[in-house]
Amino acid sequence: MKFAMKRVKLSKFGMVFYNNILCTFFLFPASVFLGQFSLFVNSPALHNYDYFSKNIFAGFIGFFLNFASLNCVSQTGPTTYAIIGSLNKIPTSLIGWFIFDTVITSQTWFFICVSMTGGFIYSYAKIKESGKSVRKSSVAGS
Image 1: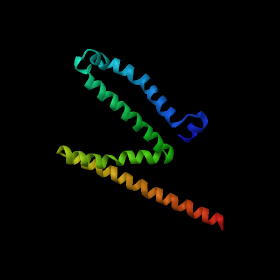
Image 2: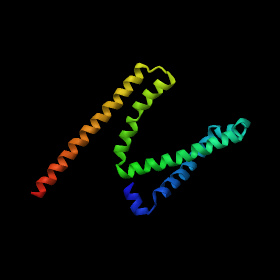
Image 3: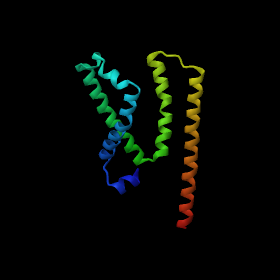
Image 4: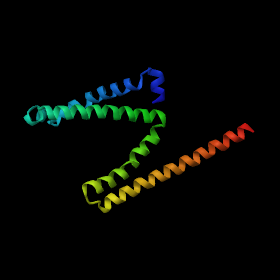
């Protein structure tokens, strides 16, 4: 990410904009092939002000979520972003269970535990890695 921003000279806004434009070239043919585009065109319930305004709002929010994601990747790194992305499933599933009164199966609990374990292992490895770099810099400085 940092390399691309320096080499291509794109701002974060430009990266988000071009990312969304490039997605269109992949998603539109898939929607046509799977019949979703014709379903959209032929559904009169989807051609009203309410649907249009909610869709514009969702696109607006999605654009800024994409902007926030790219900002997080550029500030921390792709590995950290991926781990945080996997760990956010834990509170999301628990909040969904609480708000929507859904059943959490044993399989769901297993995957929550796997996600937590992965996050803990990653955190432990990062702490060990930063401890080694601090020791190396203190040895080099003396």
